Length: 111
Length: 114
Image 1: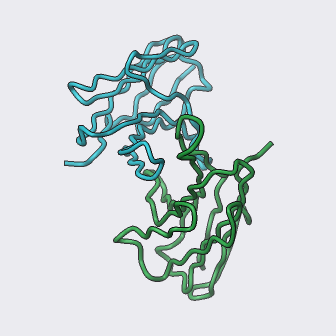
Image 2: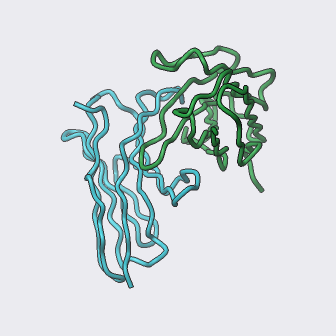
């Protein structure tokens, strides 16, 4: 079993749609959780850190369920500019060294 | 302003000809990483420095070496590039002493091997 798994994708959705991505992790001792966005041939950029209480940033909502070891990302009112690959990243400790990447889920928002 | 700067952005080399990629950071982060990313794959960690301590991943080929002469700079040396080493190389930093611990990436260096 891979350490971090994500919905395989790709997701093709129309503009304005709501889309949700799921990510599961195997190490119950994982400490920190992040969603990164990566555009084609660009570097990953932090979209959101994910907190136990859940957090929201505009159209984006992230949730963490430690008991079930999964993380979700919800995008409401999708825009064409949301088209990208979304990477789930888990930090195995709080020492900033052990980051594990999921394989990514590709999203295409269609006009 | 860019906080993690990689040079060159694009590098073309011949099979077997050594290459050095550089990374500098203005964040004063104590941890620096080198990742290799191939098309449609997640970034793969090659090695990282925790302060001056070098940590090599078990499956990183010996062909890949790194140097960190000071806090701000880190280099990736590919001693004898093969066709399979063509990829995007991403430098990233994080801090164990400040912030929320996330990774900050440079824009990457795209390596082509002829």
